[in-house]
Figure 1 (tube, rainbow, N blue to C red):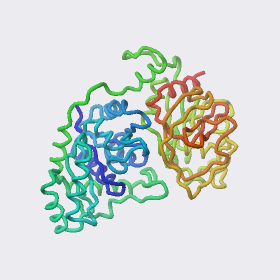
Figure 2: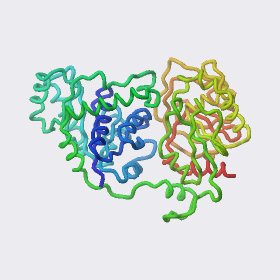
Figure 3: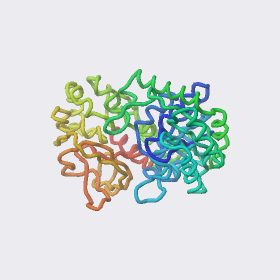
Figure 4: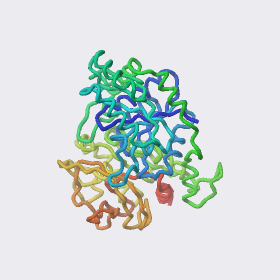
Length: 461
């Protein structure tokens, strides 16, 4: 049994990232092993969570992975920990568009049987806070509202008014935080600036969040609330069992790797330009028999020795286009690998890097396409079907994913597209060429472990 809390809010911008990260860092500094989690597909907040706890930030997405995998994935990430803190997404009851509670923070909290702490921006209210909290606490009786943390409180008098108003609400006040500019992380076109780009400033921001939480919250009450969560039924997710099941092999402990022989090297792009990859992807690749070796396209002029496959996830190459372009030796190495037919999987940022150019700067030239920044934000969950056989999936494979970008690739699809989208216009998207699969669509491979098995098998072939 892992003690656990879900940190939620009435809406985005209430301060739940600051509070969740501060709680993680404060409890970790007190000597607890803290497991960090994030509801939904977001990949920036988990970077701050990892900095606060020293453990990988993990996502819990009931849309992409399905409700049945939320608790097993949580148990996998929290294995051996004293406490888990789960940061919510958007407002508490906001889920996948048009699909009710699916993938909302409330949905995930119920799947985890976890108490919820509501972070309320109290900056422009006093007595009305009681009506707001009452509404959120009573909306769904299956959601256990364990307490409220008042954020952006203006003064001692303001705090007294808020606490007095909430006195008869039945929801305890577990903290009151003053406005603190030093805890804020800078934002840009897709949200917070990632940890990897901020260096020491990110550390200072997390430390300030921890101190603010320590000073303003009842840490003992929060820990007691987390420990009141009941035991979760079922087993933790295991990448080896997932991959071997996908391969139709026995799942007993110690079963042979789905790909026999020497482990093929799979290069995994990282660094400041490519900050996004779900932790389970590398675990699944390893379980499938690969030797996963990270590298940084901003600085490394060669792919890792013996590279047989390449995975390039999400990130912000648009912020580093000149530096990526200047690394000509690596661009050529990537182009040569792709030309050889070796497997290459690229999502979003990886798609931009494989294009002929990005905002006029030469990229790898693997794809006959050009990428540029735009004014339009593309954001949302997607249901997709593989249009053709590729290194990731057989034609007809159905996956759920999400898009999140403010760039445009022209053309948006190759002669052989990667995905057909279940949208009103039934659009196709992405590129499948030789061993390359490149697309804007982010997917979570835990939902379809056969993706990792198939990719590694192609690398070993």
